[in-house]
Amino acid sequence: MVAQFDAVRELENAFRVLASRWTLALPAAIGSLLVAGIIFFVIGAVVVSAIAAAVMGSSSGAIAAIEAGATSAAIGIGAIALVSMIAHAMVMAAARDAWDERDPDFSAAFRLTLDRFPALLVVSFLIALLYAVPVALSLLLIGIPLLFVLGYFLMYARAAVVVGAEDPLSAIATSFRLTTTHAGPSVIAFLGIIAAFIIGRIVDTATIHVPGIGLLTAFFVGGATAAYIALVEVRFYTLLRGAGLTASRSSRI
Image (cartoon, rainbow, N blue to C red; front, side, top):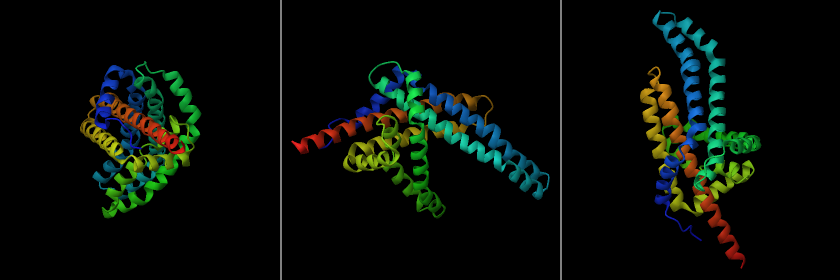
């Protein structure tokens, strides 16, 4: 059974919901601001130290600066991943209220995120493992399209964990099943997610190095982009899972 809904209209509705329930973007906005701060103050400090040493003609100093900052950079990257995961999960948890035309209940969303945190960690780790090969092959360019293909098949995995309360392996399997059995609306949803991500990153990259402006852009644009993506993921996961359940019941009658 094919899901009977207008996928393009649902993408438009996501903009409408975000505009009317703009507070939904707050967790993602705060998370985006923290990520920008980590990049600017932690990772940026390592890069600046290495460049300064190189400019002064000390290659050994540059190498020493990089080695000394390697631990800080690793901690910063880990913090970025953790903050992004929690913020995105909170928005997905609150997105159900927004789609039902209720103000987001962030206290309930936070409790749900904490409850699903172990599963989120595991599914994020499994997704990272699946991305390892395409990332490595990206050095040869052939891995780049594989990144998009894998991203498409995995785009409902986190929603399945947070909204569907599925275990990590089941969530990944569900995402693969929904994107293959409902390819039409899923492709449209994925294109909408990619478009929002690209626009957000272009604006963010253009301003992140501008003192003050970069942090404001990360807050507003980063928050809105992440919130829109979460709305789309939750909406399409919910609709397509409902269609799958309906089809399953019909086959048993």
